[in-house]
Length: 224
Image (cartoon, rainbow, N blue to C red; front, side, top):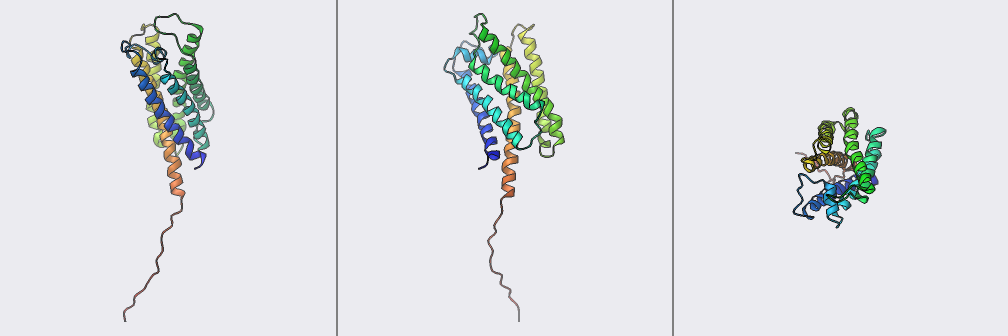
């Protein structure tokens, strides 16, 4: 199995693992925490089992593998979209390693770092998706998913605006819900790209495999 076909599978597996891990991390910590008003990071810091943090690291590494796979497949990601995807991946990993402070505590230096890298992650992926839309639409192999990525980029952009409002003048009302919807749109972008890449890589490989038909001797019967 070549790397071009293996990387998309690893990327898809990483996304699935991360989604499952984040969901499990939200179910475990504290029944008194309201997911509508508590962010994913605050859930993570309340449960030091590390499930959410591990999921974030896997998602960050999976995003890097996806980027490598996209470049290997000559997808139109080079330039600024590539840089933004690298920012997304790195920010996720840093945010997982450097946690925020528990609810009700003053922000420490590490919590400030966590906040800024989280902002970088939330902004970079919708921006990368928006830049990819015209490139995908102009690329024959990627044109079928351009419209889907466009809608997800729009959802991500609206999510960034919404979370900015609820985090500042909105006094954190429903911030947990808004953050989860934004994160869902961003993970969906990765999932669409990874799934389509799997289809391209494996579909092309199957099409290129020689088909050996069993041959039988031909008997020609002639009437006398």
